[in-house]
Length: 85
Image (cartoon, rainbow, N blue to C red):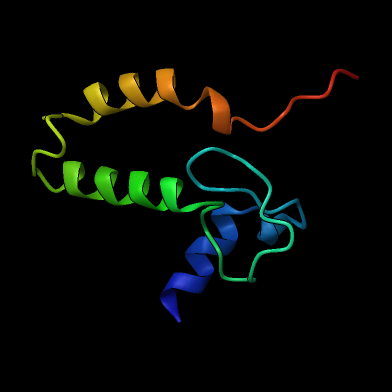
């Protein structure tokens, strides 16, 4: 099926890497194998981005650029932790 291949590349499965959320990069460990997003919030963001890319205005945003600028400010609570090596 076409969607499974796309998801596995996005999540690093093609290279044996850790699967991560397509929106925020959080780990998908413990989630179903087909999962692309870590939460409902990331699923909603993905849906908004698809609608923006199709030319629809979404939640007052008329471009992907405007949406991403605002999402970057609001996503700090969903960022994966970085570990200093």
